[in-house]
Image (cartoon, rainbow, N blue to C red; front, side):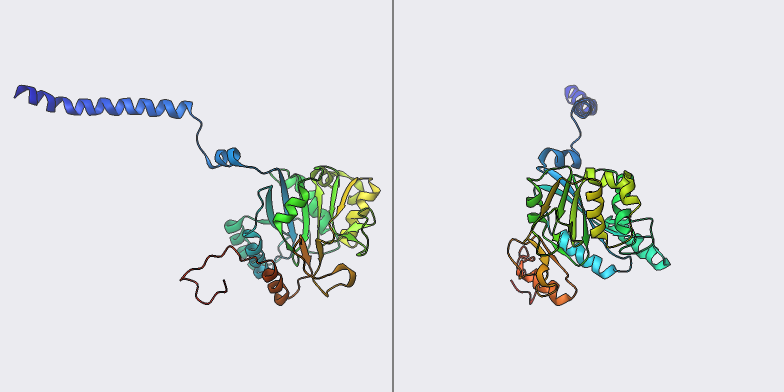
Length: 294
């Protein structure tokens, strides 16, 4: 009987001692083992070979179109590249913009507001490129300027960049339309890419700083020519083009190897592109979705 009482008396002490031992072991493991954070998991499993920032130049009031493009690019990715898509516009001018765009930033964190007055060919593109080294928390291997009426296919875009140099690079759809020579004369504003060193050069050189008025895509080509920059130039034809029938020699029929389709001005054109490239192919059949095409 006394032995049983002794056992019952000792149980709380034994339990306390066991908890102390567990705590010591756990504390030892925490001190000597790196924390398994999401960034560690990403770094340990990442196969990304390079990074690309896509800046879509648009206007603050284009709320609905931004949300649509978030759908288009939010379901795309590439195992080759870290691709960040940002919407770029100049200073806000209305109180409703400040409220609604603040909500967008809180929800999506994909907006860059430049210190400029909204424009197309009066320095917005210069402000975009020249600001990036000062406002970004990281650099990218490549930076793209894109229009908001272009459909980009991120997987083939990344694949086309993968073997290219990471410096002194200028990539896009060369103008004039019939030209196949990327050195004559400049890349179309639908979407062109510069390596990060070219972006830094734009930010620091007097050549672009003193030449900001005029067709923005033509200006970029002129800056690079005058600075004797971008020795690595690549025009990706016929994979980049204007929507069929929209612009003479710059347009042709949709093709499977497409990287970019430009001049999508109407919803029926966007719909045709989405259907042709089967953008919704990952959608699974469900009883929740009555009437969808599968």
